[in-house]
Figure 1 (cartoon, rainbow, N blue to C red):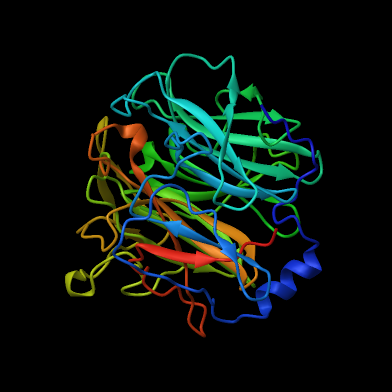
Figure 2: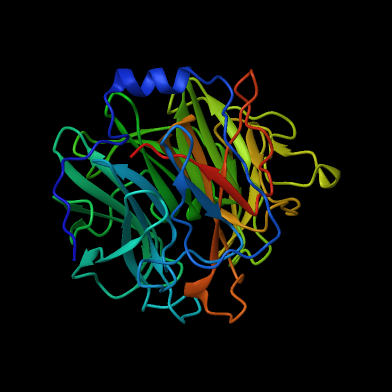
Length: 397
């Protein structure tokens, strides 16, 4: 079993090189190949005329590792550390996803095509239900840091943090209940800015499933308490990333298992803690003909939102977007991450989502993932996600 000890960087490239790659393509360029035929097994790709290897991302079959086993890693993230790709996720096996048998796994790949199972992430985890593992590299401590969402009892949400000297772990738990601004966090994910500052974007269950962003301590092991206003309520599956000087926060309506997928509302800001704004119709995973105007709760009123404990009523700090009035996604998947990947075409922002209940055999651990490159217009707005059965890219080796 591989234990990679190569010091990692978020992109594996110096900052000046990364910025140059990003700025060379104002609008994302990808080579897309769509076909109706079935392609057996993982696509290792082939060399192009320029010698650059091209691989195929397949969205109509489950991803497999080098032994032929289906990759069981969901609701997590894809990272590029030290010249190698790492896919982190929750392994569900044959469970119903609400099981204490859930485990965190990591797979690695040299090229996004050949995947090797590296093992389970956590060591000595308490009994509970575990979801959404996210790993980042801390440039100050030179540790890999894992944040995760878990429930000693459903839905008593807690956020845990663990560390490792390598990207594949095992990770040692530092804190099983990180102190955040809200007591019962749900879904959450990590973001590391170009200056090495860490942030956590998460759903506050006790605040009507509200989305907030909090700044992390320099070691990434806790929150400084600095936080954004509420971005939206009635939400889950939040993701935060940066492109040039614009920060993007993505989230969708809360839904149980999301069998039909989930829409994706887009918020933008010039700073990681906001203020964030959204535009009418800024939903990148929705049929245009099913557009429903976003409902906004004014700051001088009160909002009532259902939670597992009943109706929750509060007065918002500012105007708050209410998500989920209608959920008719174009791509039948729920987002989990936006991976920032260096490629020959430039820096790619790959939208990753889980296609819950997609396995014909109804094995949750075999559900597919959907990966698609995000595309941006000249104003920096994200264009609607495209339905791609297969597409190609040339990752930097």
